[in-house]
Image (cartoon, rainbow, N blue to C red; front, side, top):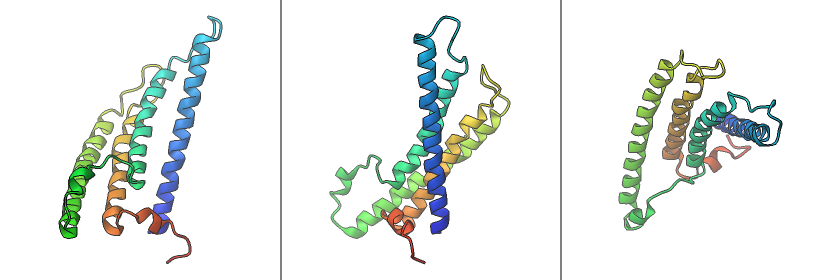
Length: 167
């Protein structure tokens, strides 16, 4: 399990860095071409589309990373009112199951939406829109993966799974 988790975690982090770097670089080039060059040098007509649609990948990969780091907004005001550990555990389990159910719906609908857009192309470049919309179900699958690990191992699962030298 540790090998699978570490592979997925490194792949997600690498994709986030790669897509973010490409987006920032393309955005920088677009700004330079738009404001600091002669009229003959214009920004890439496809640049704004790629920048805007790449944010879908960044957002959905980032959501799963936020779950891993336990960095998302959490309504602990209400949970702090529950003093009984068993009740708190039950409420946490129920909320996690609700979140898993919602992410399952997003995965299903996201794959349907991506498949319906396979023939839709970007306006200025021959890239299918489904490539960008696949971020929705893939990112949601990563979120489900993180929540399942959280439910199995507890909130510190990333520390448990990233220890080296253990079985």
